[in-house]
Image (cartoon, rainbow, N blue to C red; front, top):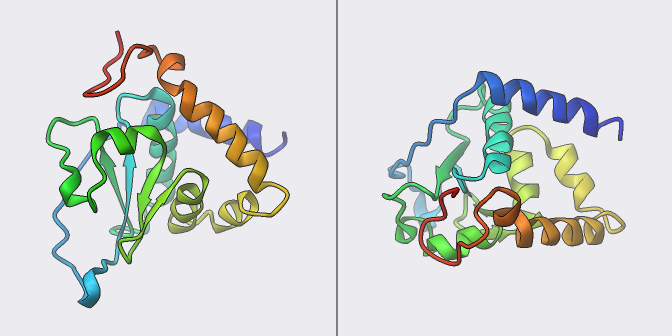
Length: 164
């Protein structure tokens, strides 16, 4: 509870001060073996909860330029073929992160990779602890299943899911 309240306050502050600007870049810094120096976080830019968290993570990684590329899947130009074949529907299902070796992480493991990349490795380690991980998996499962309803986009089943 002590960690949650400052984090919520920080998210509100950052959300009110930071606009989320989505950029999609081609990764010209490919290394041998198809890996990159950057992780790619695929997020729903139409989800206000998601946007708040991404704004906070962008704020944290401001001194780590190039480490994380935040990709808004709600933009019409999103092309899953550029992101290891992760199409819009798959990315909408749960948080998806593609690491430096082009490995796809979904759900709670995606948060672990993402948090580590922005300097919150301790939080990624915490949510991965054997006693915490099952709780996080259940809690995130509830969120992922209800996210569209909770953000006013309940009827969306495929395509772009704009708020009604």
